Image (cartoon, rainbow, N blue to C red):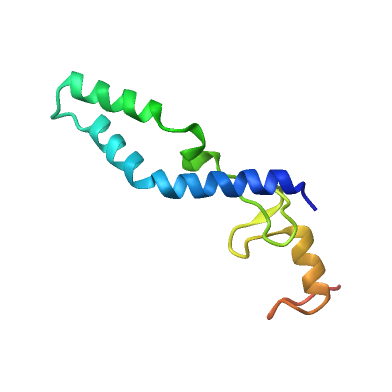
Length: 101
């Protein structure tokens, strides 16, 4: 199990990313727009830099919803390999069969 503080920090980052997503997209579009003047684009860059760092989507870490483990994460199932194996052995994941040969 991951530290509760790490999980909460990540949840806070995810909430901030969701909150500022529209504003960030708008400012990034302004920065990339070649038809605007250099001054307008530079001002948009400065406004983008003033936003909280944790509001960037890339700072959110994929974590297992069962254990909070950050590594060995399967995106499709939203859980780590260890949690997947444990729940699979208990038969709690439909369609998952333990292989043997």
